[in-house]
Length: 497
Ligand SMILES: [Zn+2]
Image 1 (cartoon, helix red, strand yellow):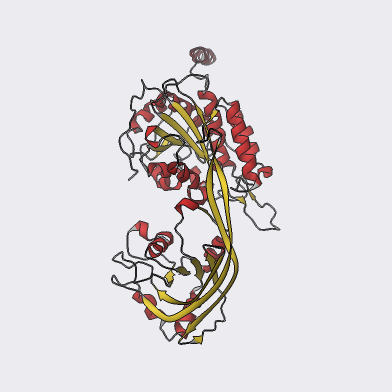
Image 2 (tube, helix red, strand yellow):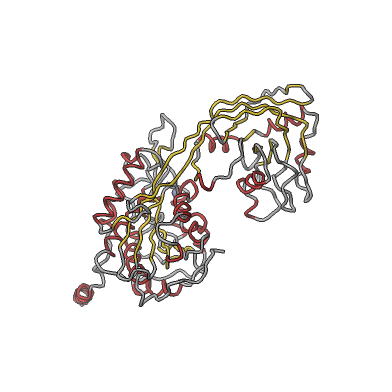
């Protein structure tokens, strides 16, 4: 009885074509195997690993039926990036004409340009950079500003980050911004971060002529040598009206910096629609990962990024193949972004110079870190409540026999994924799938293999949920690319908050 019933259902479903487009684990695995192989060296932007990655994606997308869709008609849209690392630093600090001597060498200074030389730069202590009233702490223009790196107890959440406070000082004209390491932002931590030569997007970079970090002991020694009281000074920074103070110290700097500007690439392909001008559907996912991420001598030095995000590229590729089997009203774009790991930079670059007008994008579906759990997970929506589409996604998911998670828990990740860069420009941008529905499985990944050499493809890598999500994404693509099923051409304004 059971067997017969099963056989009957299977026959009916196959005949009706309900599963004709189902993506299987074995469709995804070969892509991840290549993209997360040691040969691709962790897919770091600007390395030979990038060239192999973007070549692989464009070849696979061509085979899947896409046509190139970058702004110049190729597969590749250039993204201008820059990375900096410390070179040699010579500096002297003076108080009342006397050269200050420190036993301590906890200092890293990095210039915006390759060479930076200035003498007699006045040193200003700006507390947290801003005070509890949200104002920049004093007239910092043209000065070398010392700023506490630890998060202030006061202020709006978005102004508490070291980045936001640094940028406030730069906007106010600070010549140099030097963070003072503390208890949360410890010196070794910031040091490691700066020595990793972080990548920036040239067009979005807000940078002082000189930036760096000093250890707390260095700051104490400088203030004390200049006749000040460090504990008092530090405390004064908590005041709502703290307006900063000159330390009576000047600095001479002769700094060389290893500046490497380079071009990386977003990969863009499309399935042209039957009704030009009726809008577009955009799938996106980042191809980059962290590259060779461990020091020489370590046994495994490569962060392969199998889950993060070779799995997303594999899913996008198979979704492209699935959707290319039929014609759709709207154009369907596929965007593989660079430099997500550094700050969503490829996505921001696309938003600045989009290969398809942003206001024509009906929906952007980001696919990231998708190989987390087995099939059967609920469908979570990152960005739930920020667009008009929660209801229709639920309908499409139900048809695909998926349950939808009703909580907004997954929104905790909304700023940490490429869709955020587009949401900032009013594009309805969501992540839809099971990986972010099961918080326990996700946490297990984030606290274990995530961003380390163990994010590799093994026989144990679970692709059941990813395959199921890929199938769902084909259904979503068919829905949103249909002007009949989804007549919205100009979606309501959505600024992502
Ligand atoms: Zn990542």
